[in-house]
Every structure is written in structure tokens, then in C-alpha cells.
Length: 191
Image 1 (cartoon, helix red, strand yellow):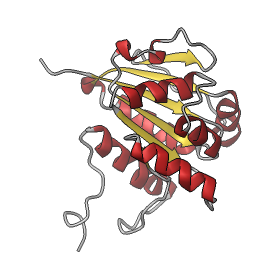
Image 2 (image 1 turned 30 degrees about the vertical axis):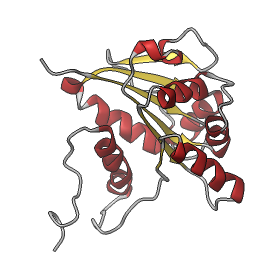
Image 3 (image 1 turned 60 degrees about the horizontal axis):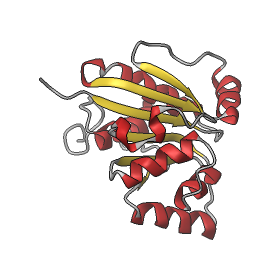
Image 4 (image 1 turned 135 degrees about the vertical axis):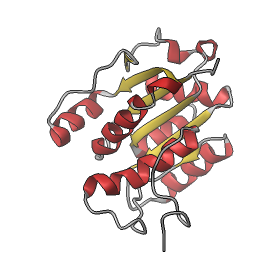
């Protein structure tokens, strides 16, 4: 029997809720391979989601929503056994808290747990330009084992619309999480 993955998806207040929406949709389509999607949304993340997307968060039996200020959620402990975490979009403030081990909420505590357990942590930054503090914090997270994944869409797949452009980011994240996907592959789909 195949082990199903337990994934944490955290949404912070950076612009780019469309990335989180797209990733959640793609993760839900992998239901044969997923046991749980733990969803944590910051207060500002919720406000930005409503402003940018004007819709509710997706609902599914796979999604378990946890309050960002609750440390009683299972994601706050390594014994809960989550496989990976994606912060999408990730603010520079969240990056800073994670990089410096300052767990002021469930998102930063969960990321700290993922790092200490040597699991996959992906921070999808939505910030530009970067200042030196951002760069130093990215270095700290990278040295601790995390993956810095700026939301930088690619164009070599010749995306026809914004959804196809967003796919160029989220398909790469699926790859990093170890999920199969049918996204563009350089060399396979290129002329």
C-alpha cells in the first residue's frame, strides 16, 4: 500500500493568492496520493485572498483548516508526521520569522517544525525587489534545508493565459513535493 502524503499549505498576506488557489486545486486533484492538506491562513492572507479572488477557500474532506494563532494544531509538533510545507505566497516578514526561528504564529511554528524534522519546506516569495535583509534571510532558510522558490513564472512554455502562466510556478512546486504532473517539461515539450 502506498503511503499518502500529509502536506501543510500556508497562505500569508502577500499578493498572489492565485498561486495558492492554483496549488490547492492541483493538490486536490492528487487525492489518491494525499492523506491530508493542513491549511493555515494568516489574517492578512485571508483578507488578500478575498480581495484578489473574491471567493471562498476550497472545501474538501482532504483539507483541514487550522487557526494561525493556535499552537494546539498538529502542525505545531514534529510527532504529527507531516511530509512537507509550502508557504504560498510568502511575505518577507514570514520569511524573516522562519529564518530566525521566531515562532509567533502557527505558520512560523509549523515551518520551524518542518525544518527541524528535515522535511521539505518551500517558501514561495512574492516580493521584489529584495533588500539585503531578505537575501540574508533566504540564505539562512536555505542553509537550514528550506527551498526558496520565488513566484517567478516562466515563459518558454508560451503560456496562453494567466492560468497557464501560474501553472509554470505551481507545477514546479508539485515536482519539488514529489507529485506527478503534466506540466511543461523543457526538452520534452519544446521544439
